[in-house]
Length: 150
Image (tube, rainbow, N blue to C red; front, side):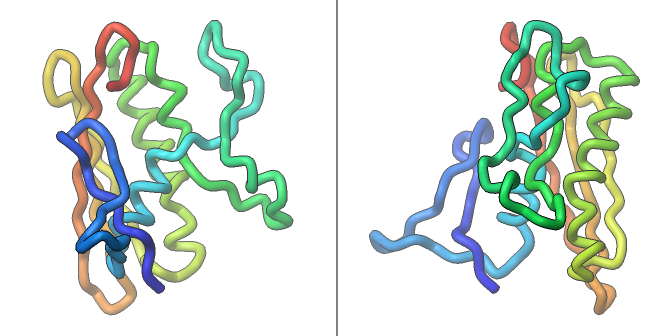
């Protein structure tokens, strides 16, 4: 099944890809991974960052009977300093967001690596092992600024 293709724009954001005035489609897992990691997962009140009131999340998750929710909790880290605790939580949030690929038997295993990549940046890399033993690798970076993740 194809998704509408998302690509990075200047390395800072994602946008729909157009080709010849039409939406470009993507048969890989790239768009699914981008949506899983960079869509805001709804959190409970106790998980909200200090000063936040909006629990975020995708509106249609309220209609899911199986409680399968889209997105990750990476957005909750935006105002924190880059520490080992933050890196550990970022890894856990990525693993949680990608778990559906294993549950739906699209992947056999997913390994996530999170590391500090500079004074104001972390790197998130993953290797997704598909059922027929092929492996897919993706890497994304976050830049921390005065307002958190850029």
